[in-house]
Image (cartoon, rainbow, N blue to C red; front, side, top):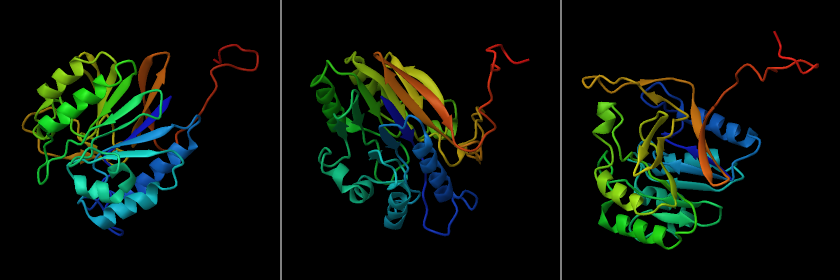
Length: 271
């Protein structure tokens, strides 16, 4: 099974650039074309938050217009730039299957159960799941302990060393860790928010943050560093589940030289 993870697209209204610099719509369009061109194609696309920049209806409409060409299902959850209500209104079919009051839901249609968590907090940049979501997660994981599960949320439940982003991480990460640790069939926890590829372990399982197809938060580990971004090569994550193991690949978006062969017609290594 191949799962694509798209995150932090920050779509704005037509004719506007994010921070006066980034054409997020054009970059999302490139990401969609990239997904369509992959062989094999992913069976599903997780969108781990910050679909929009200002949670406006026209931004959600533009996001839908840019992604509706994808032939595979799109599974969104809100980020701090979105809202539960905004994502639910834009994706009513997702809202219909979600837990009341929050956009928490599970997708059972694939070899891996996809458990999507809403970590957004109205009017705030940080994330929090809360007791009701954590209880729902515990029950949802326990209900199918014989099936591998992947957990997705926007806010990382761990620190990254990028201080201005760490101030906005998941506030109840310890509580989430306790829930995940009780369920040995969880394959991994995947997040967004930080606009960079980052890997660690969390509750004894692999955890990762996906890169943005738009702008990258600057890799500055100085605690006094101001919040800044760079225009690094856009990318997304591809999570491959096979033979009981989940692997994550970084897939860069764009035209790069290659493919070039290693071996000549006589099967010898090229000099």
